[in-house]
Length: 87
Figure 1 (cartoon, rainbow, N blue to C red):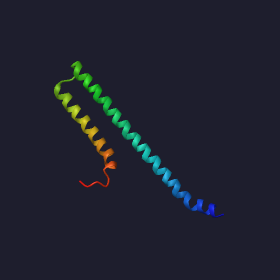
Figure 2 (cartoon, rainbow, N blue to C red):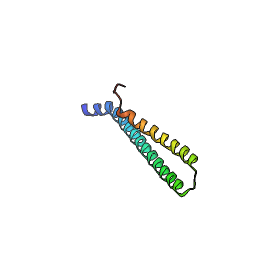
Figure 3 (tube, helix red, strand yellow):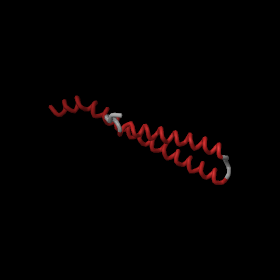
Figure 4 (cartoon, one colour):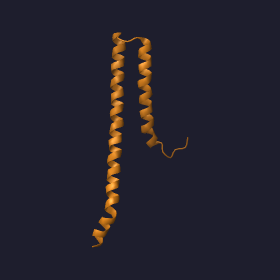
């Protein structure tokens, strides 16, 4: 009887904990997927530049934008690792 009461009391908390773990996992997978897309776009950009399909200015602008996106992603990912550190 005591175990049933414990399950009724603790059940919702365990369920919410599971939900939060699932959300966290999905967010991590989404960030990883975005990083892979940026790497693919960079590879395509370098290929276009080497083939002469784009000029120096366009290459620099697009490369800068992609590298900024990558840095922003790494900053988001690094926020979790640096929690509690003094700056």
